[in-house]
Image 1 (cartoon, rainbow, N blue to C red):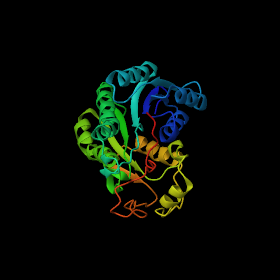
Image 2: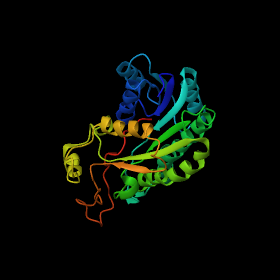
Image 3: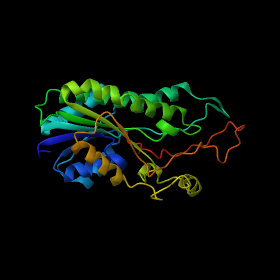
Length: 275
């Protein structure tokens, strides 16, 4: 990519998104980070240095995404978008306090699925006006989760939101092919991000049992390395790629009597909460 290329990274102030921004910067791309936490945004800029840009905002708000896209285009040609923003959630359909909150279900789907689509639609409109480089105007990479395929007990809302991201990947790629824009989704497994730093040792040990090879949690740079390859490889399109070390998540009922309607909060292992 050209040194004048810019990339929008949502949720780019920590975890997976920050690792992607570091990779982009090292390759000469100017990363524009969109996130809600201004303190984390300032910290990310200290990590990345002067060329990176932070724009405070929420992926579900069109005006915020528009502002971030304006910032990206002000500094160069927007050729890449990487959606890493998302929120975790765990809640039983029927818990001790009653049925699952419908408002919270809608909030999770709005943040993870609607927010992702909001960024895709607005960014694609900008990219479609780019001059092609080779046979490409831009690349959009979205983030799903293993929960899209193997959601655990208590992950109905989260799995639905990430399953939607997976399901729209191929239709988006087919539609945007006419504009020479690729769309790819990455589904991470267990990654050591700030979002899981406070996970109790017992809960982490439970998740560790699902590890296969390598028997470790992923480093955010493992995720970023795959994203960098996707951006560079024109033949990867319309696909969801798992990066999980062969993990297949258990039901989440290992230590729970199925008659017990209570479900404790589980960490979001697939993605840092970064909006």
